[in-house]
Length: 351
Image (cartoon, rainbow, N blue to C red; front, side, top):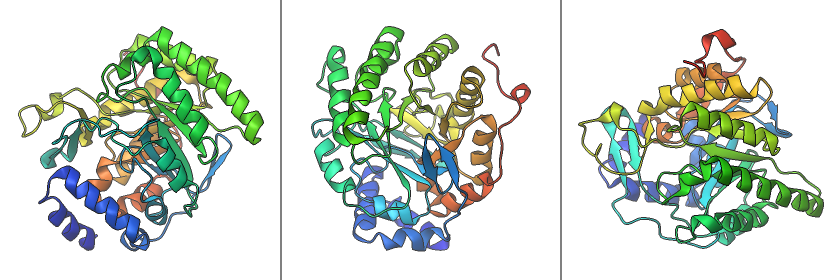
């Protein structure tokens, strides 16, 4: 939309994180503007994990860490909104500058480091917001919590968000918190999932509702580790996987301004790698295990490619920054009536 292109030009003249903060502040104060910029909401009802989604397109975690603009994103027409990552205690994250654009590739690099106001602030905000979309809350650990005690942070967050979230995502794949991806190692992953599954049984009895738990994984993972994660998730009753988080790979942007910056790369260069992970997961987990595909969507055709790879739902982040709110309805329309590709057309775990 022309209005968004004009706004983007002004915002792109500023530091990436500063423009992000100004946009969230505006959406928080003027939630109706979300609907004005995006057009008519696409109704394409989907039932998954016991939840009713009005369409298959969601907001990825990381864009609204503190749940400040949930109502505005709801009015943009998202089928679901995932906020966070949130940690037990507030934290500043990594030193600035920590977010960088690569416009020629429609990409971002960030090393924010779970900067957020803490789980209590998010829960208070989410409890009173008006919305139609499904709400997911993405949880993580504080940077100063030793990896050996990470389970305690995830448990603390799970207990606090359970009453207000429709589903909970366990983030063990951000590259911007030291050693966090170690939780994807088989023994630690198995222990964490067992602990969270046990806690959910207690919380289900307390609240009279079973909240789906999903795990968000990295794209920088080999096939053996991917198989192990998928099998462990099913074994412990985890309800779905989100593939993928940002990548530490730089092949697609090598030599470009800011490509040398540390952190996670998102945007168009991630599309193929993320789709490959989705396809390999679908092959492993079968047709009925929920998968959410995220990474690199810049158009309706990109969203459809992720669906064809095996994703039930998709999420947007960087594409929303480059394309604007109109991308939501474009993707939702592209996904209406779509089906998985046949197994023969998907990348194999042996490929």
